Image (tube, rainbow, N blue to C red; front, side, top):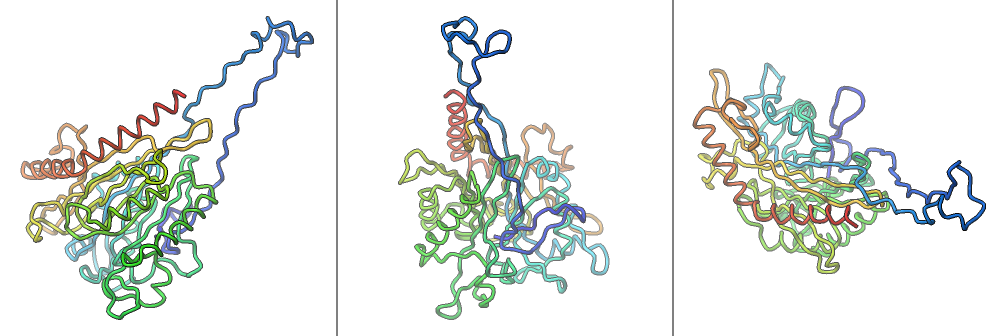
Length: 424
């Protein structure tokens, strides 16, 4: 997993320094309130224990458990810079500006406490191109951080340049968000290698890259589970109070998870992971509320694929002509910390997104449209014509049909936990 994380100086600029660049955070401790001293009305300790009138018979009601902190972590899908998006972002010469993509989405991203997306491209510095090599100008990062993204995932099948500098670099991140320490890690599947015994992404991966990218092989899952378990332990040793696994898996353009995805997800639930966020199929796949087979009290919220955030995978270009490749989600997970020191997942929410594409006199435009039902007039709010509003509504219905059942189950579970906590 790699991060391009916000820095204090230089405006806000992501960095490609580690598989997941680790930011130092101040440990957050909760002190339990000491039992108060028994005092008399004038503030002194009573000398006669029998004098119970001044101490309310020695009975002190325990402080009720209450929420002391809350952190909302949000994730959206694949950022795929096809040639059409490169052309639309070109300003002049070798200068590119991708700000327009986030015109209507920016306020939603910035409102999250910690926002993440998957960068499905590389940053080679020159010779920019789209499919199949994918090499994008660094200015994309400026636009993404300006939109409010705090972290970019780069462990995917287009990360053959490597996503950390050194094999010894840490492969996960423990990040304090509003005083809640979230442990995060990202893995990508290994493709079929051209040579036996070699690791591969899209058919090839050199030895250096193989040593510095978090990958798993579906033909040797025990090795993956063992490695991940050690890294989860390391995260918890660093103070992680909740854990999120981002995973690049599944089959492209399939609307349902395959058997391998389901098998891996259940194992991760058994290992105690709190949230699983999947990507790679380029369509939204269902959500599920999983129950651990080793601890019936533990459940994991899983979304098998969050779809595309932005791309040129239009329905009229694709074999899958249903429009699902134009859809994505901005999924938010709310973690709450309580006065007894515990941290639990207390809410899950989904904002469907749709990529609006249209032509002006000078260029082709791509915009991420937040399909927010609290906005009464999408046409006016997002500058959509009648056809655009129709397509946006169709996208919303497609996405909610896919995730609705799992979302409802996850929300009911999370909210019941929150209610039970404060009513202890």
